[in-house]
Amino acid sequence: MLPFVPLRSLAAVCLAMILAAGARAAVEPGNAAPDFTLTRVDGKAVSLSEFRGKYVVLEWFNSECPFVRKHYESGNMQALQTAYRKRDVVWLTINSTNPDHSNFRDPERSTEIMANWKGNPTGLLLDPDGTVGQAYGARTTPHMYIVDPRGTLVYRGGIDDKPSFSQRDIPVAKNYVAAALDELMAGQSVSEADTRPYGCSVKYRY
Image 1 (cartoon, one colour):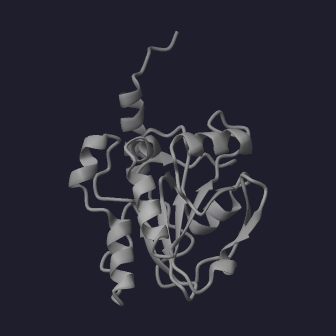
Image 2 (tube, helix red, strand yellow):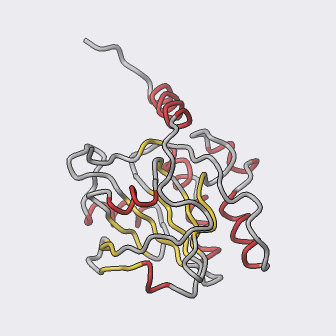
């Protein structure tokens, strides 16, 4: 029988593996963001190109990941979604978990989870074959991207600079996404456009 491994230890191992990974994203800041069309959990098709003229945040998501739970169970992710949607930012939450993985949640269950967490994205999108996630090089949940009104990728990386699954770190963390959006909306370039993501690995179908 395999020994019991506490969740904290599993998450730490997961984080170490992600931080050690050297895979390079397929799209880098300064390049055109790949267009895509995905289906929201309510069945509506959504394309990135339909939001041209607005800032768009892409958030990679897996409800079973302790790092995602850190930001949702604390209310941190919902606060960001709400604050920037009020400033006309589009927020697309993308789940690239493949349907054969135990972490996969169907549209009905995904809708229920997001409602229970009082999430406020513009849309929760499913990417079951991982095409969009791999086009962007998304490798963690969360992994964050910002696309500017011209369709250029202007930020990719972590949500903040505290790579842990502890909610206690949120108040003292530098939130890279908020900082980037504030700079962009002030007419400035993003001072830290490419940071290291942290979290659980995206559960692609390999």
